[in-house]
Length: 435
Image 1 (cartoon, rainbow, N blue to C red):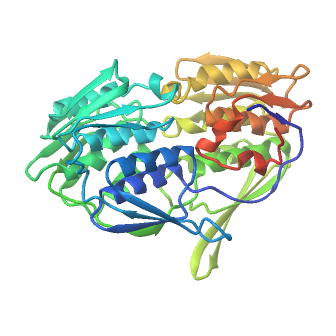
Image 2: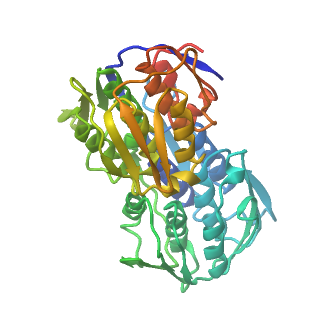
């Protein structure tokens, strides 16, 4: 799908979608629990739908409530008390384009002795799980793969042991942390992590493990005893700071004012760093706290009245911010350095190379670095007539350039716009865009 973005000042009050990272973790934990869990206000998107398919394949039952008449969406998940599908000798599941679902489910599949084959779309076929598969092999699991990529077959059981797991993406470690407590009693999993990017996502995973016994960590070492089980729960999914970056960037770029609802500044999500970036670049960022029905509710307002300024920003903990930060920097005066984010190259696309290539189509020149890029901002875009941006079927690339296009002097076309539905359904309706 191609969308044409017509320049306009962006603003208003927006309810931020629920967090994809929290939703997928809660779905898988609920699917493994013994009993019924309630996930309130989950993210209903392409990626979370892929996770639902995997959870059902693993034996969970999921019932949706409140999808009509404006009622609050609730997913009731009856768990399977661990991944137990012993009646089936082997089966295959399709994870779509969801890397988080793939990596987490690979580890969970290692808990059982029947083979499970994982497949996925074109992007997933290029995303390597090799370090995770090597670690699983060291824990007694038998993986088979296409050079670390899908199709991947996993066959347990999980025996435990000590493994070394470099984590260019934190999802490898989160996968083992979610699955290891369900290993047989007496099985101890020890993980040494010499490299860990995206540390806030590990803090998020550990927050779900706080009531699981036998989990400890110190510096780069993690130790998890088997024999535990996940308990049913009921709770709401917080808003997604990763998604919030795009309307916030749009306001900063166009000089508008946007108020975002549903974000919790105390949440573990590292991508709240984007609001610090905007402040350092010259935006006014104001948080407010109030009560709604007895519950604490936060809002944050972003506006820009002056000139955006370049700066240097370390994105090691938050590589998903690179596209939004890069397009914002395109409107800044001076150079902006986005660094320490080499792992942005192993997402849905090589986001560093893609941003350099596509920004050039808008007249923005960048210097590509091994671990990031330098955006040589001139305070505005100077694109040719009828620029066409290739979205590369990457939701964050598509949404970043949609925000950028709002401040362009000419309309901008963006391809593969449908990929925004992976994390932000309704994004283009939000921008009032007709394709």
